[in-house]
Amino acid sequence: MWRAVWNGAVVARAAHSEVVEGNRYFPPEALRWEYFTDSATTSVCGWKGEARYLTLQVDGRTNPDAAWYYPAPMPAAAAIAGRVAFWHGVVVEQEPEEPA
Image (cartoon, rainbow, N blue to C red):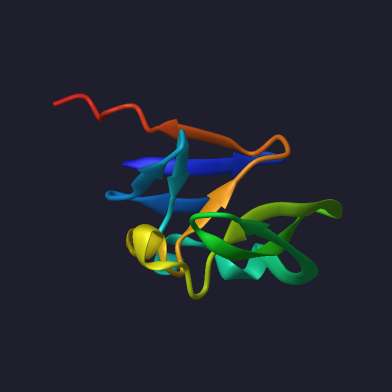
């Protein structure tokens, strides 16, 4: 399992994710949406297309544009359509395995 953690909260958790350019993209159903709000920020990647951003809010702290996704990526990046990646201090890590 992979997880994304910020300000002590697990904001996303998934068994499967896609890795592109060193960034792990979580499926939308893996996110704890109560921590996320839409941002007006966008950016453009030459081969992935237009990215949209999400702001994190956990326990009274705000992390603007801490996550991004490509709602309609170019064909070369189709595998990450709608999936969410993180930066700005969000730690993406593999969860330790439970002892048997």
